[in-house]
Image (cartoon, rainbow, N blue to C red):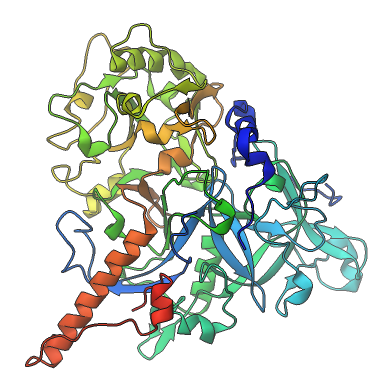
Length: 605
């Protein structure tokens, strides 16, 4: 049965969220990790799935996934839309219980409520449930383990035993555990006990698959690589260390999702634990391997919030092991991650422009004027230093930039609208669809990744509209003017990311035609600036931890369309194989091996 939309998002009450001050908007950038020694504190696109892909690019249409490599193997899963966030299904325990978790590239720990988190995800007065799923009941999992510890001062009972992610709380040998807590910029927080269990991501949206054989049968994680010639490597179910939450506050309580999945580049991150599991089983990535467990990609779409999001509204795709060019409208281009040692995905802004009349990168008409936001790199990035930049944070809904940019942005905004009286603001405004199309697109120029250029993985600017050097676009970016206060040092291999108005302008659910701009210029100089999910939207963004880069490709991010196209590729490949084997007979009509699976949206090799 479909769950009703929570009352705080129904009818006119939604406006409380829509008109909320910026301080109450979703911001998943962690303010700090608290070591707490006291321990307190409807369009249902398809069922989500994580299915092996193995295809060739010979049949791909020109301009649609044309850079799709032969023999690509990776894992893809559906993302679903929350209230300003995107989430994936995480199946935990034996037998598996579903926990929906926000994908967050701004934090490192996976955490969700467990059975001792009383009234978590529930309205304290009405007892109405906000979260999609009940708390994870660890007592019903045969593989659950709580982490225990022993400090040095208790050495009389045995050797010291440390926590892998949290802090040790030790009263005696019977009462000891590892505590962990986090607090976020939005003001929400959680407290948890470090635990572990067998998990797998995605899979059928409403049905858990118990055991490796069941996963294999449905194609989840099957045959991801070979450890030896005769030993296939299956790796999608593994033991994950996570936070078993005992207390949550703020938006963690009234969000749609149950918890959070940390995907930054620090200890405890989901992708990193998966990679470590990969290595423990003996797999070693060889040169030329397409699948790379140090990479993952996110592709974000946006669906109307008037839909019953609790039922599961598909709104994007997660790819583990690389990126999928079948989604792409433009070739993937690579920006430098300027401070990977900090654990975040930080890109350096070199310039910013406004281009009139909306549109994506390739939509610019000949001789389109670009209006430069005349500010130094120091102010564009919100802080001094050549290694400073802006975090790409998938768990934060909006984009937050330095208040020192506001005046320069406003000047460019007036010119782009050809209206000297125009004023950029974050107040609600009525716009027609035609008005929206005449709003400017924000163009962000990011420092390119030099190693990609040297190794030949950065596309040639002549064919990549996402690079400054494309011959038919962006020429205005390289022009200098004596009137500019800032130095113009962009080069042809720098990356251009477009934020069109239908991404940065959010429409009210209950009052169609009322919009609010969700790019804020309110960060004090020296604070950490953030590119949120409205920056990611409409792109497949590759987080390449092995190469220290972040890739961008404008993409459709429609998982249903993706499955149809990849299914066509697989069927064409099988038809060619059959025609080769039986050259005197026409190719047979292909029918899904399991029609029930196929009709539910599954797509298997």
